[in-house]
Amino acid sequence: MERRAILEELKKVLYPYTENKEQLENIDENTNLVKDLKINSASLVDIIIDAEAKYTIEIDFDSAERIITVGDCINAIAEKIK
Amino acid sequence: MNRRVVITGLGVVSPNGVGIPAFLSAIRNGVSGIRYHQAYNDLHFNCQVAGMPEFEWERLKAYVSEITFHGLQGHALGYGIMAALDAWTDAGNAIGGKETMWDAGCVFGSSVSECEVVKKIYNRVDAGEAKKLGSRVIEQMMNSSITAYISGRLGLGNRIIATSAACATGTQAILMGFEYIRQGTAKRMVVGSSEHVDPYIFGAFDSMRILSRKFNAMPEKASRPMSQTAAGFVPGSGAGALILEDLDYALGRGARIYAEVLGGACNSGGQRNGGSMTAPASPGVIRCIKDAVKDAGIDPQAIDLISGHLTATAADTMEIQNWCLALDRNGRNFPPVNSLKSMIGHSLSAAGSIESVAAVLQIVHQFIHPNINLEDPNPEILRQIDPDCLPVKMIEKELKTVVKANFGFGDVNACLIFSKYN
Image 1 (cartoon, rainbow over the protein chains, first blue to last red):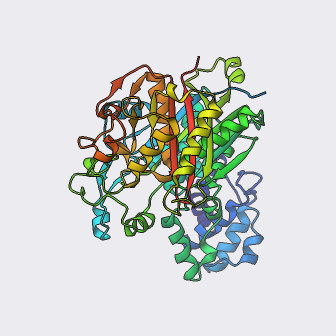
Image 2 (image 1 turned 45 degrees about the vertical axis):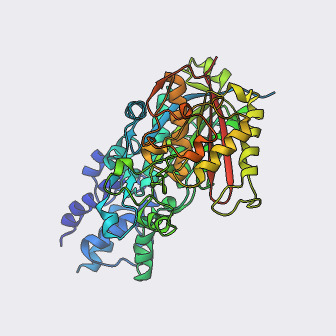
Image 3 (image 1 turned 60 degrees about the vertical axis):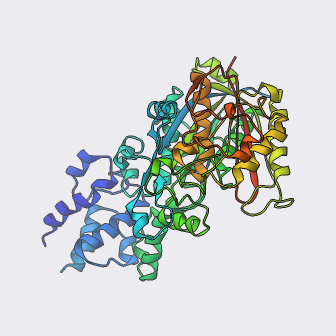
């Protein structure tokens, strides 16, 4: 799957976790999940769990800890669904 | 010097009405919230009726943020949030301020974590999938989950205390909040309690053979406190909440005052002298009521209404006897007594707070709600008090002082004295 397609799908995963819906619509790979989208850092765990369920993949704890931006998210997902 | 404490806000999620207007109308008109549940039949419960609030989960979206709502589970938590926030706004307060309110706290009680929610955790962990539990489980499983959600939403910065004292929980929570304001620790307290009787808790009570099982075909008749045909309680669910406030503080902000809390008491019979894990010892109950009357500084003869615990079990007769002895009143001199449980069943931890909301509403609107299903009062009770003390229809009456008590497993007792504000 193309990175662009993953990003579009990712918006749906992130939707319940941010009140900045407008900003969510305009995210790019550099968008910081906590700083830009104001996502509670505790929610990152839930986002990863939701992404795992959506793509039927497993993101290990070490990869999960490296997720800071939307691009990091896409990396973690793209790596697993290759 | 003791501060005076008044009630300025009310909120309720009750089997016979969600929200104060619906609840007030229901208790005035003796509307039962007890329904038959096919699920309990399927589970082979002896008791197949219950009082469940008609609670629309989606309505919580108006109470918590969208992000909080996503992943929120647990009925008792939902009921508690709604009742507490309704009470807060009913008191004329806004929600969502930016600053911590250091003078406002919360005492809110519940009895057990919701087994239906816990079951999901067990299943995940046992399947080796703990990793998938996510970040929202602990905050909803901790005993302090309801106080954590309420205080976070409102920005409360004074004492935040989650309590548990079985069926005395609600009454005790109100008493604690009252004491913090009276002693000057806080200016405002959100107090109350919440309960959701899920099938697992229901089943465990059913197994104790203390639930009503003979009225499954007539659910509205099933909860019969003080009746000769009373044979067990009907489980109920819901939440009640009150905003207690320092009188001067309330006057200073021009708040509407519903009633005053004059005093109260809380104790235990120590599971001695007839008391046990499940039965209250009369000496403890009598002492608790006497202490509450003394704390409030009132003459027991001045009590206009007793809001009893009165669950519709064999303990009702003993409870009436205890009231007679504690207040030194009997026969025709006994005050009117009613049990909200006739309409909504016994909502365990939530009973004390929902019944206190009812007590305050009766003071505000000057009426006594009926005891429904009391067409056949227990002769043992009629040996102690006059039949006129057991209203079966709504009575409009001047009410100044109402006493409310609840007694819980573990032999714990709590009693409150509410009064018309002058």
